[in-house]
Length: 401
Image (cartoon, rainbow, N blue to C red; front, side):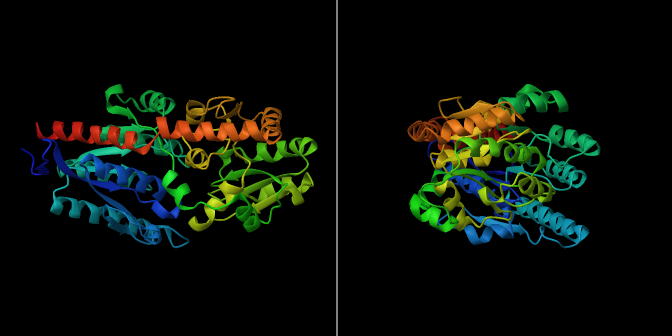
């Protein structure tokens, strides 16, 4: 029997240690996901230790599982080679600690240096660990053709790969030659713990953002990326203003390898500067609720997506959504029931959907509430954790045969 076996619970289920390795954490808001999943995993007889970056440390709050910070100062403007060394040092520290504590499974989320990450996964396997990879983005949006062979090697080296949607499952099998049995679909979940902890009134939220009670607020929230379709949203907004002149577009989030400069120029060229509120920077956690509480509608005009945390945050705050009919968005949103789906890049359809939501307050409220209820019933974290725990158990049983 494997030395990685911890003990057996009173229910007869094996309890084993999982190292949950997610280096982004509080740097870009992944800690919402990490905390939600790890919290529920502990209720499924899974002994889990979250391994993440030091930028997550300020957000720890009443967690019933251990959190460690092996990834220190791996983000920022420092030299890439130095940050890469710190990342490698963090991964090696995890492997040594996992061997000492006799962990059974290493569950990896996100990779930063693919050739190095592949070597680390192979080393993990050589050391006797079972490896699970969650491919939040099947192909990272900053990946080029030279990274594709490394992704293939990495995915094929894992014992199991988790994706969030059927669309992602199809893509990872087709493009990387994975067997269907190796890919498990486990959806992303909502953030009710966050929304319930940060309840504020709509009036207070709008005061914080400098908006009036009568303003109709359209919210784009999240990283500024080419694939987010922000240019289409800005181009569509004058059409919205013609019908709903009291509307305002709020764009909040940091640049990610893509400057906001061209979008700012388009806003000036369209002469809608006074109708658009910009906050192009990381939004501190204590301020996130202001934006979602104040919004009348959350818009996701993406041209490429696997799944979106912003979608589930909007559902958590019971907000109606207007989104592109692609990827995981189309799998979660029910058109005209929990939101509107429009063809990606179709600025006319995008404007028409926004106008319909903004002009029908009661319908919008009903959509938002339906979305929240369905997120709880279909995509709740207990069900997600159960599926994840079942996969852990299956992989661990295969290990000790």
